[in-house]
Image (tube, rainbow, N blue to C red; front, top):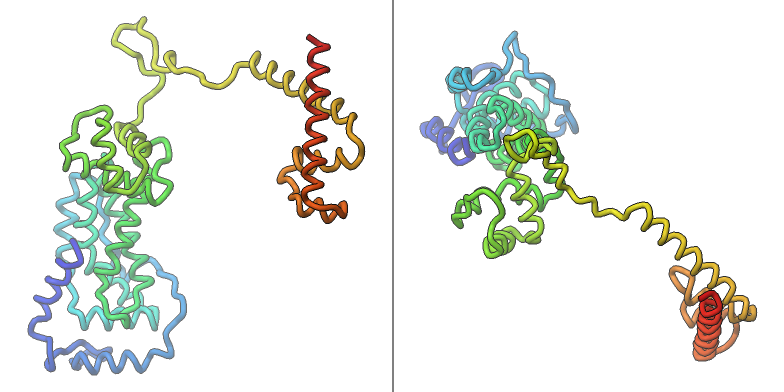
Length: 348
């Protein structure tokens, strides 16, 4: 159920109680006007608890109805319809009682009156292959978190505030459970995960496999993500596949993992690169023996140190101009380069 639908239901229940004749139930059971209810609530403002943990909603032996599986979904929906939708005044008073006095019964009524909202939102996430009962349960957890943090004095309805908590809880559950491999770790990836199918349907790109470059570009521009992310997510949404799955039905076809290419360097290449690097470092150390102390210091600071020192820093260190430091650096570099060439020619 969306917030607008909830508000519509609430407005229809409270149509006879708006304006100057609006009333709500006081703590002693008497009827008072909505304005008086708000004034009484404001009088208790100083007693508001800063943080109140949300206990398990259990009131006089009653617990929240829990969805089971697809077979019990209809019974669950029928059960939650029995909880009345609160009027704005009732919702305000219950939220005040919960926030200021940790009234568990008030929290229970706030939660049960919005279970239809959770079910309505959860139905929009049935296309991910997960049990709808678990999706609804996760949405109920998000609703509890929303009730815990709801501030009625800010003027908006609980349904408007809770909708975002419910969606966040459901989406986190889907991202945790949908694939064996963790996906959607960033905000952009989550946005892509939950909107890719809808956008593919909009541009008639429902065929399995990779999309055309034009389709990928269009989706990437609409969502503001790189085209590479669109391609990767589209392939991930195709589902997890085992690397041990056979290529064809016959037994001798081999497995998918047999066609994977190892792009890392082999041991021979690693050994050759390390030997070449060690040789270059040995030649460099020998070539630097041609430099005097000042040339060696400037050459190391400008060419080998990370990050390199600036000409200004070295000019202050040696008490000369920056141009003089640059000249010494170039002369030292030429000496080292010449010495290394001679040593390589001797070894050839």
